[in-house]
Length: 234
Image 1 (cartoon, rainbow, N blue to C red):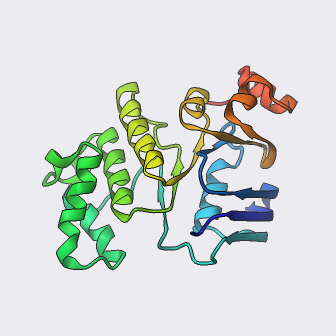
Image 2 (spheres, rainbow, N blue to C red):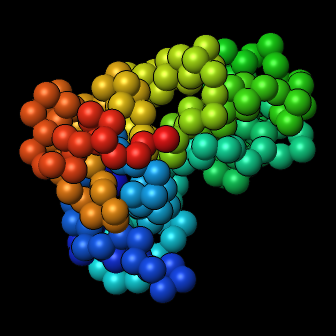
C-alpha cells in the first residue's frame, strides 16, 4: 500500500512565476479524486508533481511507504506512443516493469482486450484514432495493475463517442480497485467519475468536498463562480 499521498506546503515556480502556492492535502485510497479548475489553475503541474515528474520548489510530497515508482501510472492528454504495434507498446511497458518475457504477450493481450483493442494488437499505434490511442495508453497502464492511476485531461481533445469509451475504461479501473486521481475542467465528467473534488484556482487549493456537496453547496465564491460558468473553463 503506497497511499496515502501527502502534500505539505507545496510551492512550484516556473520562469519566475508562482504556479502553485502552499498546496497541502492528504489523498487516501478508495474514492476517485478529481482535481478541478479552469485552464491555468495549476492542475497539470500538480499532477506531474504528485507523479514525480517535477520537483517542488519547496514543500514536501510523500507516499505512505516512500516507494511509489512501480505502483503508479500516468496517462496524459496526448499519449506518447512508440513507433511500434499496439501490442508492442504494451509489452515494452511490461519489459520496463521487469515482467518476465514469457508473461508479457499474454498480459498485454489481456490489457488490450480490457480496453476493447484486442483486434488492433498488430496495428501500428500511431495510425490509431485519437480515442484509440488514448485507450492504448490506458491499456499500458492496465497491464501494470497500478495502485494509483493519474489521468491528466484524458478526454480533452476527443469527441463524445471516444470520451464515453475512455470513461468506461476509467470506471473499470475504479471498479478493479485502482485509485483514480484525475485532472479535468469538465464539470459533467467530474460529476460522472468523481467521488471527491479538489478545486484549484490560480494555483491555490481553494476547496475540497464530496462531489455532490461541491456542486450543490460550494463553500467558496470561486467554486460557485466556476460552476456557474462565470470563470473561464475552456
